[in-house]
Length: 65
Image (tube, rainbow, N blue to C red; front, side, top):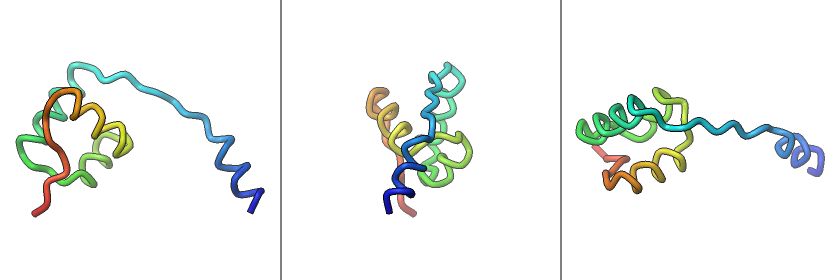
């Protein structure tokens, strides 16, 4: 158990700024009501990152169909 925790702790967090193009893409996905799982794969960002950015932009994400 401790070995698994140690392996996860070594993973380096790399932060990427949102460019104007990223924001434009996120707004387009929100308008198209794209599911969050698809946005995660397309943008290669975490769900938390996407949701935080959407919150700051005042847009909604993760629509169910």
